[in-house]
Length: 408
Image (cartoon, rainbow, N blue to C red):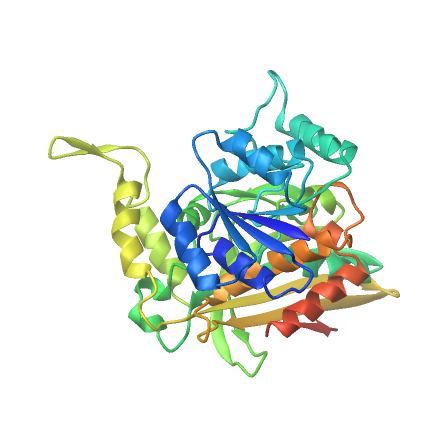
């Protein structure tokens, strides 16, 4: 099979590297609009099956033509405005596609529609259904939100829900932080492993959640909890709080009583971010300073990002604790899913890249093998039936990532 990876940054390059571990992957295309990134990625991967493609100004036209020469595509772009275009483009090219971003394009968020070619007076819901129908008509699968979170979080919770006679709650707790050995060296005990601006967004945005049987908007970083993580030989105190996520479940699992996502951090992060927000550091309204208009968020983000960037030799960790509760055989039942991912210091791959890139690469290989039956725009919780779920767990285990299930 031939697989095309679009975006060769921190995630895309690792996705391409991992695809080269599969004998049935004949070739891997790596796409970007920045030549040095392509050269750096190809030099690191060092596999003759990798072909780089530099996009010019006619992004859509060039990409459609390129997609037609590959069997499966993977979207690994960091920004929603770029990712928006990929879904339409993949459908136009009739390409089976996996995207690692967090937007569920059968129900796209109204505020994320820039870049789509939407007919006048068409709602986001109607447009999402239009995309879904186009994909079905072309007999292709568009697997959205397939990284770490969303991705593995959706997949495990969806599988847990299926084990219940009646599921009541599905709560995801996911996050990435610097390893405990170096955490105190970073402000807020946090390390940027992907997109700092997206992290800021998650601390600012109210998010629509399902709680106690009703849809409501929750403030970012609300529903705070402090807990002990004691799996995989660990005994660590961590914190978690609501951030945007799990949006697809509002559509795919509407009968749940409660469903939302929380971000995991080392204790103290939430208080630090709340302080910065309360002081106005992330405001987007320009202020005048010495005769110039300055956007506080833009300035603060660029000042902070280098301080939070990984230092040479320092590593990160990724953590997951997801919980499904419900009824089975007339009794209360609870299923918990745990994961702890360390960095790969031999190949210089961050924990977050492993947790995000590997699910996408595995999904693309499964897609190329014809394992996904559902057509149209599909969420992870719907795509992974028992067979695909076990295939994902088995493949992750070969890469040193274990997902542990605990049933009460």
